[in-house]
Every structure is written in C-alpha cells, then in structure tokens.
Length: 304
Ligand code: CP
Ligand code: NVA
Image 1 (cartoon, protein in one colour):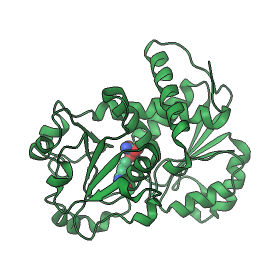
Image 2: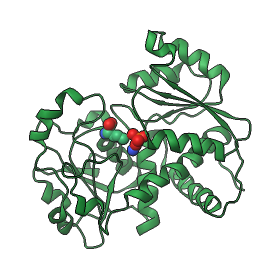
Image 3: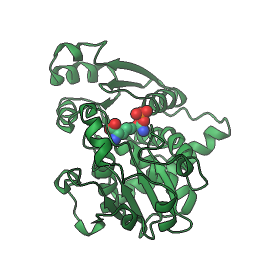
Image 4: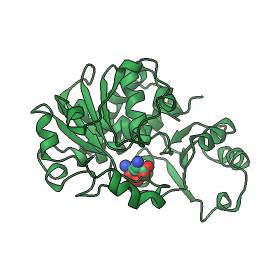
C-alpha cells in the first residue's frame, strides 16, 4: 500500500506515469468520454483548514471516476472534539477505500497514515502541498515540455509550496531559485533534499527571477499563520511578482500561483491576469492529476 504524504514519496518514473495518465484522463474528460475506473470506491476527505480547489477537484474527480466521497471537517466531526487521530484513522479507514487530509502539522497526517488501512493523500499541511505541485508541473509540461534542466523562481514565503517545489526539483532534475524576506527562509531539513544543489538562495527577488523559465509565488500569510498578517505585510512588501520581475525572467517564462491570490500583495494584477499567467490551467489540472493519483494509489499502473 502506498501513501502520498509528500512529493518525495514518488520516484521519477512514477511521476512520469502520473503525468501521462493525467493527460489521457484529461483528454477523455474533454471529450465527455466516461472513465469509470473507481466504481464503488469511496474517498473520505478531511478538512481541518478551508479549501475551494482541493475540495472541488477531489470531490468532482472521485464522482467522475465512478466513485463517491464523504466530506468531514473538524467542526462537524469528532476530530474537533479531541478524538485521537489514531482512533479516527482506524475507524475511517475501515469504511472507505482512500483518504485525503488537509491539516496543520505533517506529523498529524503521518500519524493518521500510520494507522490507516487504506492509502492517504496529503491535501495540504503546514509543511507540504504535493497535489498542487503535481498539477503545477503537469501544467508546465503541457505548455513547455519537460521541466528537466529548467529554472523555477520562487518569490515569497519559505512555506509548504516552497518546500514541495524543492522536493520536486530534487526528484525531477530542475533548479529552484528561492528569494524570501529574511526571517521567512526555507528550512532545508524539512524538504530533506538529496541534491542540495537543486536550489539556490537570492536576497533580491529580481535576481531569483533572472532567466527563469517559470516564476511562481504564493500568499504572504498561509492558513494557520493569520495572527502574523500585519507583520508579514511589512516584511514581504518587496516580494510582489510584478512586470519588472517577469521581464527579468526568460521572454517565454510562465507565471504560476496555486491560488487563492491577493492582487497587489504577492502578485500584481497585470501579471496574474496577463499573457504569461497559466493560473487557470494550473487550477483545472488539480482535477486531472488527482484523478490519475487516486486511480494509481488504488489500482496501480493502468494500461487501458
Ligand atoms: N490551491 C489550493 O489548494 O486551493 P484551495 O485552498 O482552494 O484548496
Ligand atoms: N501556502 C498556502 C497555500 C494555500 C493553497 C496556505 O497554506 O495557506
């Protein structure tokens, strides 16, 4: 049994399979062709933080595969009344085939997985957001081909998205140029890199963008850190991806953002709504890559 708790749970060949499978599943979806590979399977989705994209893509995706979903939140389940996560895992995983969790500490997700009889998927933790990076790289490949040897500029917080980009770069052979305000740096030990040369740190965000193939950013304040919002607004003021930063990148560079976005904070409206932005493809592709992921976790590699 396999879980998808962080990007490094996959190897490069498995990633390549998932991207190929997602492309096929997407093509069939666009042609209104049925792809019912998970008939009678049930996904439990546990949300301890808010979500739009993750909820809709997993829920719609599971129905489109012929399965069904159960949606739980902290507020409407015993999770919010201190039932141990281990007990919840033992119970929920006896009733469903697959579990997706969005929570705070990665360690909580790992405790759930350690007590689960079925595969568990990380739907975002404080440390990682691997489903998003699967969608982002799939989107890059659709627009530009292989990401191997390319440079991704990460401008902003050293957060869950940044850690996951580093793991993906380590695995798939590209480079991440990281620029964060001081005090918000990446903690390299979280990503647990095998090739530390897959990322490079820049003080000035403009330098990180220089000759990049992809420029990407995220909110200044992630979920769970709201109390720091005002302090962060001051610290991050220079880490706004604007047209100047995009001009420092390669002329054919793409812009990505996992969304939700704050125009005028981490990205200017001209950039996110401009010609280099692929944020809507990126959001849509959550659906297709996660369908491939769920199918693979439950059925293994498919040939038809
Ligand atoms: N990008 C992403 O995970 O969005 P949601 O928070 O809306 O799920
Ligand atoms: N870094 C953000 C991503 C939201 C999808 C957060 O954790 O809130």
